[in-house]
Amino acid sequence: MSYRDLVSVIIPVYNRVKMVHEAIESVLAQSYNNIELIIADDGSTDGTLQSLNKYRTYPNVKIQSLDHCGYPGQVRNSAAGISEGVWLAFLDSDDIWLEDKILKQIEYLSKHREYRFIHTLEKWERRGITVSQRHRKHEKEGDLFRTSLGKCEIGPSTVMMDRSLFQSLGGFRDDLEICEDYEFWLRITSDYPVAYVDEELVVKRGGHDDQLSGKYGHIEIFKIEALRKLVDERFFSKEKLRQASGELAGKCLIYSKGCLKRGREKEAKKYESLYFFYSVDDVQR
Image (tube, rainbow, N blue to C red; front, side, top):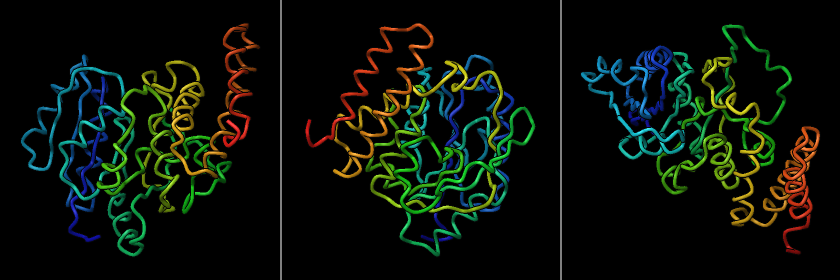
């Protein structure tokens, strides 16, 4: 860990011609200056890629033009493949960083060398209005596996991680449209402690129409499928596998009841069956 370490910042983007420029400028304005920025365009059709031409002359900026896939993890992985930094940091194209975001993470890691993964507090805005986070009392540092099972408590735009850790785990799943971050953080937190800077260093902007989380009206089904594969493949150690199986069973039951209320009886029965299956202790299966 050194103040000279190169940090590779990855911004995946699709059809956000205005917001992505605000994200980019927040990276270029960082007080920590040993940064390379990789902007990976996922086949935008609104002129986003063309609007990025002004950055092509910047020595620390790379622009990737990709065929559209619609999978954020696949786009991030592609950008990581051409990165050169010791550290990887991620910024969603609709979010922005405060100027000391990277510097404060670097400073923290230089004092706590046991960590390979770090995140920060976020300021949430919905259509320009700040959203209170007083109800979010979860653990934020150390062993976050149990916390991360319930929901994605680590914002992608807050994360910086050791490049070699990213590579050893194979990066994000590249076949999930939503919750690819939830799945990846579970793989990380199952074996590695998490560092945390308790400052609002990222502005998470929500409420706009093109967010994937709003496309389906809910994301729980994506969490179920992400977690189910990890449980089925027995990715976790025995104790954490039990925790994951229990969480998965609970999610299936809640989803089943929701389907029943909406008259989707066949789907309700499917997830009720999965509830009973994953409720059984893994050792007995």
